[in-house]
Image (cartoon, rainbow over the protein chains, first blue to last red):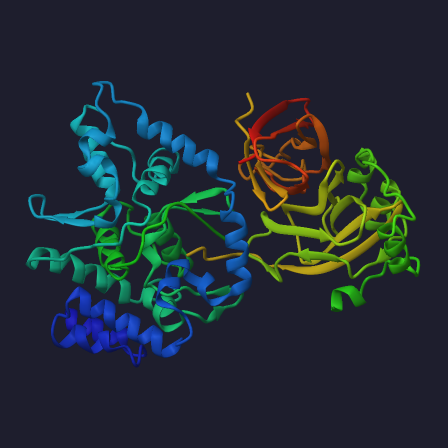
Amino acid sequence: MKQQIITKLLTGIAGLGIALGAVTVQASPESDRQEFIKYYKEKYPDIKLEDYVYGALAFDADSKAQYDAIMEFPPFEADIEKGRKMWETPFKNGKTYASCLPNGGKQIAGNYPMFDEAKGKVVTLQDAINDCRTANGEEAFKVSDMKTMGVLTAYMRTLSDGMLMNIKVEGPKATAAYEDGKKTFFSRKGQLNFACASCHVQNAGNRLRSELISPAVGHAVHWPVFRGGDNLVTLQNRYEGCFKQVRAVPPAQGGTIMNNLEYFHSALSNGMPMKASVFRK
Amino acid sequence: MNALRRNVLKGAAGAGTVAVAVAAGLLKPTQALAAAPRSAFEAKSVGDVLKNMGTAAPADSKDISIKAPDIAENGAVVPVEVTSGIAGTSMIAIIAEKNATPLVADFNLSGGAQGFVSTRIKMGQTSLIRAVVTAGGKSYTAAKEVKVTIGGCGG
Amino acid sequence: MAEPMRIRATMAGDVADVKVLMNHPMETGLRKDAKTGQLVPAHYITEVNASVNGAKVLQAGMSGGVSKNPYLGFKVKGAKKGDTVVVSWVDNKGDKNSAEAAIG
């Protein structure tokens, strides 16, 4: 069944070895990543791999210059500052996020999402933050709430700037979650019948009307973003936008489908430096 | 270049001569002027903005450079940098020609401030960004087109 | 009331490079609230003043056409490391804010 789906969905993504890999043997995340890079490299030999963290900006100097001008003194600094205050404010029991997250919450964002064997599921950084809250007698934040979780992570993720993305997929359960995310990535959906891959693999570097499309490698390292310098958007928030843009009903943020997608998608950026929070159009 | 060619505000000839005169110290650059009157900020057309600023017929100048995008990433936040190479530059104004109120800001420079300003502006639609510079009592101008598109993936 | 303003001032040769980020909604008065459909009242900075060691270097007038959380960069020749840059603004409702920084 699964094989059928993937074969069907991937028809048309010619030249991408991963398509064949997925149906024959279960490719490892590292070989998947290499296949993606190879595909983009062949298509765009002049774009440096390290520039993929800039997404579509890597394909357009005019856009990148605006990014640089805005990042010089980002208009959203006050929001990051709000996030810092949230981060530093102790829970009612006197403990802090830093005291319950690994390594004081620093240089850890690149390890997430991670597969939690005990829970038997993917845990995102947002989940880890919520676990930290509930363990200390606080209510969990809604993961899709930009005013709480969004603002907090807009600061918290800056503590991992420069860390290299380091998603581990080990063991059969983790692999199954990864493969589930991959399936979501390649499955066509919505009235437009687009998969994530239709845009971000097949059409990366092309324009859809006025929009230059970003490659999937390098996507996951720079969240959240402030769109227009103002509107805070987290990665799963952005996924929701993508689902809606192809006229599909988005799965719930923080649910298994989204988390597994983030797991797969993040592994594609393994080895690339984390950078929060950034400007996007 | 097209933007410049389409410039409808042909000013007085001999702008270069004036700049040279200022540079040579023949004309003293005026000291910091007061900010443009609020009426200039409320004006709805470029012509009215210029009249209200007292710079009705600025001369085209190649010594003004406008660093602004060809296509704005987001019309809500368009980085614009204006550098004036005209000696004695005492004022730089930024006008987004098709905004409802075109005058975005004017910067009056004094006490060692260089002929340079950098800011971010809103643009409602594709339009010329016009810089108007005052130096030595004369006014100069240059323009660059910035395209504004709707939408955005933001990935 | 007003949130803090940020100033970065550094010497580049004999010119001080000053960058300022103001926190302000910069409402033009022409935007409609997405929920209520009512116009959001105009609320924007109308004037910015900057000085180095007490001497005025810049006076700016603004409309609501400057982006939210306005950014302003300017360059001052003859300033020195350690000089004090003061930047202040006034908006159309009479709110004010001021901040200072030493040139680094």
